[in-house]
Length: 208
Image (tube, rainbow, N blue to C red; front, side, top):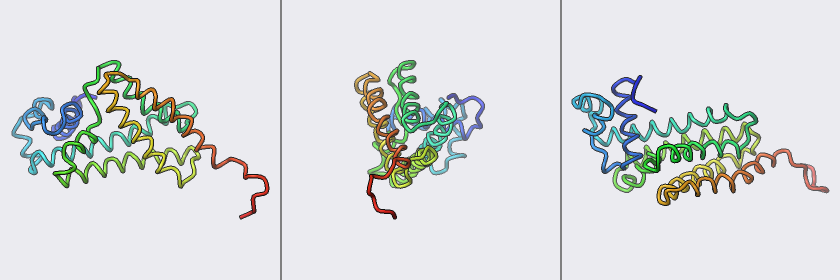
């Protein structure tokens, strides 16, 4: 992902998300966002009259939409979509980044949640909405793969929670060990859930 090919406002939101995922909210200044976005510093006030709080909230929203949008692309890339295969793709996005670029970046939504959820209500709300959008996209994908409706959202939450935790551990350890572990261990659990809707009923079960 780069800032090229975007309008100035979109570039600044994108750049804020990239800096937050690397440095956290506290260390991401408006000036550094403008420099990263290759935008005039004065344009920040024009596009974000609410200042840094507005910019952070919009960056968090962008990150949620990006994560949700990636779900459809991951599904399209799977020859035979399965829940475990989808989760492997979600994890692989991070293992490939860390193996290629190092462990400098994390999830901007998680970073904003840690830095601001207790002190800035709008950012807490933006983070909650971002996670909800991402969870919803994963839950819909699970439903499309035959996971029973009542298990789609819980399993989507499990997938995202496991991924976020593994990202944190990976950055601390400077190793993809936690990421590969959650993919390997959770994949069969997810695939088993997809089979629940077609499992035969126990012998002697009463008709509904």
